[in-house]
Image (tube, rainbow, N blue to C red; front, side):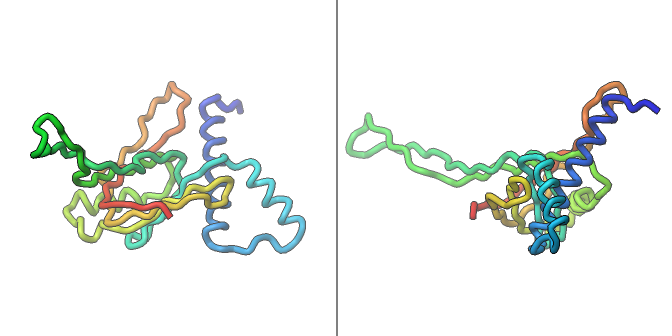
Length: 186
């Protein structure tokens, strides 16, 4: 049986995501590592084949965790307030106003895990108080955490499923948009 090119790519992406997830889960669970030399060799082989960067999401109150291939929106900005200086009517001073945080956008290949969809459904049905959760995003470099961002009072503002095209060879992806009330990098 001949596998179509798009199926090969989808299968390879799935395998790479699973390997990254397994390596990340081992690190996040605090496992000490393989006991014998054979396990050490196979563990390092897995890390060498995993994607360079993986993003792990952990939602504390919601009890959800997952791995993603893209993250954006880790930004903050202040509104700029312009005021006129009373002593010099031609001088406009700029001072910082309210802080605004961007929505966090996460993307990954579609998986069998529907916990994000259940989390989003809580908001759709008006159960926003129970949907809110603190959480963190970990940037993993071949399974090793290199940066962590903690965010507060998050809820899923948008969840987009894959755009399916039987003629294309793209991997089916889902996108999660998280609204929150602030974050900080540890």
